[in-house]
Length: 132
Length: 247
Image (cartoon, rainbow over all chains, first blue to last red):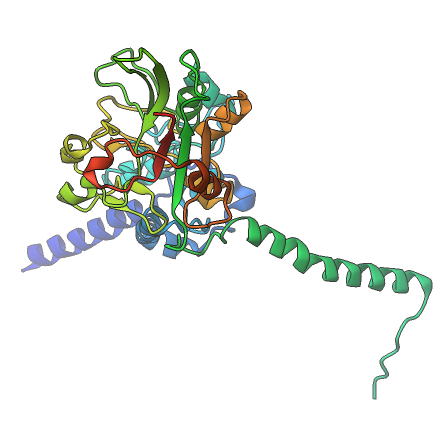
């Protein structure tokens, strides 16, 4: 009887500690501009839970209907959330320093947006490099 | 009781009249912008049908400006594999066997009114937008390539390679079919011209004219009315939005 109780308590403690750690993502090195951190289009808890819903709706509106509002556009997310590293380059989508990848790697949820979409802010120079 | 005093010194008078002036100018500036393109939050309208008129007499065989401009605009890379490399627009040379007269012309998605690619798509990814632009919704495309087989113009390409450094306004990726989108991002942002047409005008050929086919006052409609414009494979009854002169 006593053993069962101890197991239950341990299990509960384990769940509290480890699930808590994975939800808050406190240890992920988000490379975000702290001065604009609270100026997102929605509060942080809503963005964490529903950003994919906003993006999916926006993608349908833009591709099918031709609506180009920027509030929930992926390019708008990228322009704020992806900042250059200390050496001036943008973080790769494969590294944890990329804002999207940081959480997605921790949560083991594969992010496929950037198979097609640009994962860093737009610079005119890069186009001419491709053209050469 | 508090008294509200009206300040009438020189400084506040100047300040107030300046603000009044700005307020009266603002709507004019705002409406001018609206008239140029449709507002960003408004969907594409079926009142418009975008199209192109290509004058093959102005197009020269050695010029490739439209192809280069398209590649630049959409970040299309060349992997040195011509059989599978992506091509949204290509240059073709036609020679009449009898007379020996040759024509050079750009060939791309013809943005048909009755597009065969849309008919055959099993997922609905290939679709025609309200303003007549035929597009691929890459979120639903499964890469089956039926549309490529159905297209009489060989206008579509399948992306065979892993891509990096895509441009934000033109998302492209491996496993999807894609084709000319009439620079839909430029249209939506009010530019009302395509990269190829701009490049052609810049090079002084004026061979590509872009505009609204439904507006009788647009340059393209006036020219079509005056000189006519031929459909490539007009026998198929697709009613293409890209028309050619001189062939």
